[in-house]
Image 1 (tube, rainbow, N blue to C red):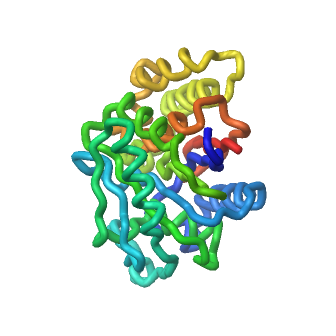
Image 2: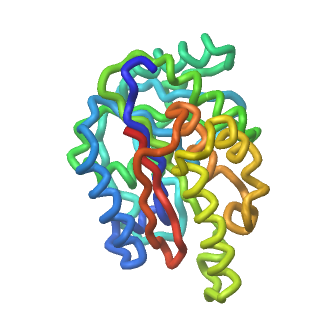
Length: 266
């Protein structure tokens, strides 16, 4: 791998709540601060957000992206959050070329801003907003192998001191967040989390088997309970496709009273 980047899959919580002092996000905020302290501060960040889907993988290429407040029903201050980081058109072009060179048709978008999958976790990790960022969309087919292949294509990127973040949520059943927890729901949540941790961290699993587990993630225990729609899981597939190994470290935490996890590759 050329200039191997740091790679992180994170669970980004519920909308802007992590930035509003919500007590059910305190572990998440602390975890992201801890992870930031472990990383070499990057020169540039590429974020694959669960909140952007396109027909083909699309890269933000503007130099001064605005913020997209893509959430509803939150306090008024949620819509004046600022994160004035710059874009990085040069990296955007390199990402586009890496995808096209791998036979993956891709596009550039110089108008789109940054959604909360980027600015919420980065405002916690790098509050000074002094690191240029770009976003890469998911593909709306939501095909897991397609997203692993996107990650593999990014292995050819030549860019020093790059951090790639898959911004999703390892548990994303919206209805369950607002339903009283039962022993059954707790068991379902914890069973899937254990499968995910094992899949991403067990060094005794071959990369071929790890790939197959992620491709067929729906066969995991209670997969569709934890991920009724998989857009919050697929940024992990991009991360794994890029890293192509078991994670260096994983983090278990509770967000909104649900067990969640994050994965880091150095």
